[in-house]
Image (cartoon, rainbow, N blue to C red):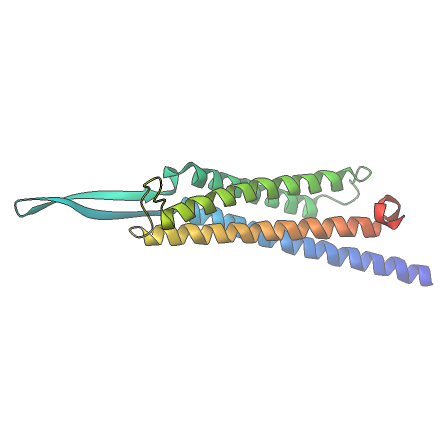
Length: 195
C-alpha cells in the first residue's frame, strides 16, 4: 500500500515538473520571439538640416536600422533560432511519448541543446548590450558620436529587445536547472550525488 502511494506520488510529481518545464519553455518562447520581432522591426528616420544655401536649408534624411550593425543581425538570428528550438522542444514534449527515451539519451541531448542555446543567446545579447552602450554614450577616445540622442526611439526599442532576450535566457536556465535536478531525483542510480 505504501509503495503504491509512493509510486502515485512520483507520477504526480513528474507530471507537475513536466507542466513546469512546459510553462518555462512557453515563457522562453514568448520572450525570444518578442526580442526577435522587436529588434527586426527596429527602424527610425530623422531629417536634419546640414547646410543653408541662401534662405533654403539643405536637408538630409538619415535612417537607423537594425541591419546597420552586425551585432543586431546576429541578435535577431540567435533569438529566432532560440524560438525555433523552444518550439521544437515543446512539440516533442507534447506530441512524442516519454517511452522513446533511449536509455537516458533524450535527457542528455535536450540538456546539451538547451545549454548551447543559452550560450549563443547570451553571446548575441551581450554583443547587442555592448553596441547599445556605444550608441548611448559614444566613445570620446575613438571620436565615435552618440546615436541615441538623435534616435531615441530606435535605442529604446533595441533596449527592450535586449531585455526580452535576457528574460528568455533566464527561462532557458530555469528549464535546464529543473530538468537536471529532476533527472537526478528520479534516477538515483545515475545520480553522482547520491553515492
